[in-house]
Image (cartoon, rainbow, N blue to C red; front, side):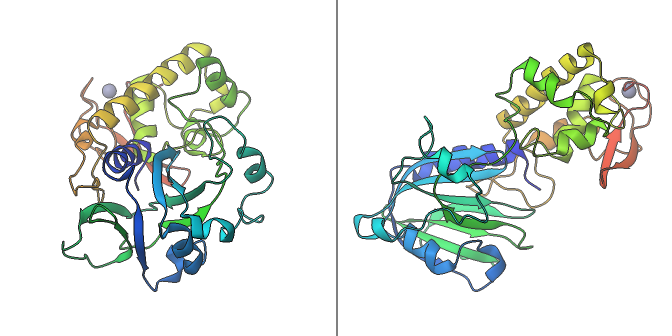
Length: 297
Ligand SMILES: [Zn+2]
């Protein structure tokens, strides 16, 4: 499943290639679960719209659109059942969407990917959406396992804080008094958004903290180490273009390289890079979890 560094890599690739372009037309496939908004609503919002920006919020890709004039009046507000209260507040925030703006939101799920290709490139199996761009290129959404979702809204907000933006005091505060294992707390998207299994394991290893430790039991010193480790791991992973462990590819179809630098994730039974002890694999929060029993306390 793509985590923050993979989604950020895709965001950067998309931003370079599609900002300033215009969506001429859209083709949407017939697999209904991919589309969280009715396909007709997505098509109406996208067709003729200019791509103003591509942002990332947690694991969501947010494509800011300026709708074509003819569509402006027909754009729906964020459906209330999905965006309670927040949808309305977000509109006026600095850096948020302009009142007239629409956002095309894409969550890649487990196997989703976005490609920017020439219009004549072969269409891969499991392609669920194709946007024809004025530049002659196409933006395609491919998702074999179909856990990915796309929808259109305005004033998109999502809970949690970006781990690369939070300050150390706020970071320490979110774990205070929590009885859950620190690994579960790191995966909780309502606390920090974008961290997943790989980067939680790698960060805990670098911080020397066992994944099963109660989050609330971490000392300030340990929280400082964890804060720094998360920033370090995410920054290095983004620089390496993310980790390719299953179906992850960037917008040009290139894999990431950070998987070669994993120190514990996926290395159960292998020797710890620091002390040589065999890496343990356990299950925490229903997820395979890897740690060194000697280096992590
Ligand atoms: Zn070790």
